[in-house]
Image (cartoon, rainbow, N blue to C red; front, top):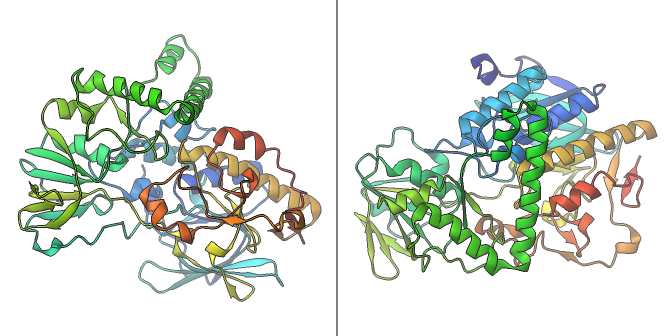
Length: 502
């Protein structure tokens, strides 16, 4: 990654700039969206605003040991950019991949770093968004004006992770660090480490620390499903061996992963017990045939009701077999000077405690939105396909999938927004707004997602902050079915009754 690109900042001394489209965020969503806009709508001027000093988003925020993807890069990578490394990739490899996309497509000149957005205001008189920013030092920055706003800021707070206020935390004499705000100077060599949590972050940081720590204990309130497999694609390796080009390999292997994910999703609903038995067999290949799943590795919910934690090469279970890692299922009563007292009465001694307790949901990056003088309350809007909202014109939001790779939706939304922008130009329209058709006026407005469909803690904690879905109609919700959306979104009638143009 070139230093000049990573550290690029916005031009100084510019009071106001005008663009057709403004993309907020230079993470994997923003970079992918910029590519689609650049290639599909070359006549549109645009800029990408990023609050950080570098691109990468999530992959810049998280620096804990071993940080890696929890989706394969054949689907987490873009449709248009072949992936040539191991399916599960390190943060460094993902950032190098993103850097290549930026440099190969000349996107660096469109990105303004260290530009934090304070407010976005829509005027129906002008059919324009006014975007106010502030500089890294807090002083007012450039004001931007655009016709269309493309939100790619993710869905969680990058500055303030979720850290429960456990009793006695101030009494603990060791180090307590949240994985999201990792301290690179933390010394855990030869020390007893407790990692609180059992999701993807915990499953990543635990094996990465295990060889240096005296012992690592995974403390969880409830078990998680783990999917262990070798970190390679036999199909990709075979295709490359016989001389198939990278573009074709990427396309074919991507289709294979999508097929396998689709089957896993379906079977998790129809035959969850059989799927769990198969997951156990995969774990035993690394943990040993006599590995005990009760009580620490038997979840209380069905597979995919929360996200599966992918374990490349079964590394965490290899460390369990070697005796370097153990699991405890219990709840924290309070911290002590020497560790953690559990509700069962047991105590875990610890020199270092890592909180892998997730994040806080943050709708639209916490930016203030105003439409025609009225503040936007996102919880009072209704979502159209999880990317547009009633009462908020000329805005699209990129929010990926839970049961498939996030970036699959980046490509789908990218195609949709570019088609919508071209359709507006063809109609001579400068405004598009989503409205509930009269025929659906009596449909109930329900929570964003059903808790029996997908119910991780971070989502349930802040579900009330999210937009509503309209009944059970697939187009009026954030649908978690990529395979359905891959057919429905490209076929969307842009002159349907829900689209209002001006």
